[in-house]
Length: 138
Image (cartoon, rainbow, N blue to C red; front, side, top):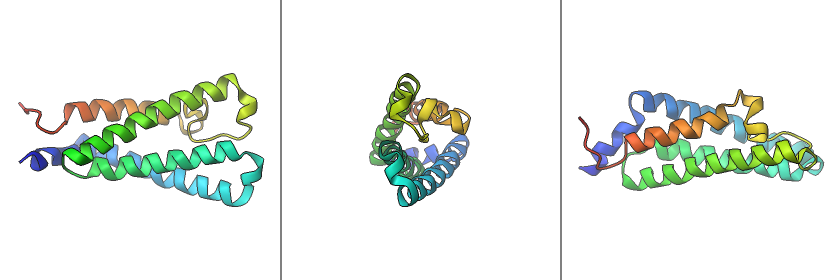
């Protein structure tokens, strides 16, 4: 019955979390595809990082919406990767702006997206911790 317990991750507030991840998955994928297709030579590192962010958001969206322990583990890895990515790229883009002549989703800690990319993985990890498989619900 662990799978049934795990299904609650996408219900209630989790539904909003999955929706926000879905919006970011679509936005980051569209942005990266456009940038790579039209201006890749101008800032290849930034545009490849946008593509990496898009993949992370897609994986997080799908895994957060799925029940079960395996999807839970994939979610933890994806959301943790997102947090590490946004902090790393955020720091690099602030302290070495020349390396990022064009913004990515994670530049300046997601400033172009209202800092949601910085807050979202924190909320995601809190949600995952509270809704881990096998956790007794009161």
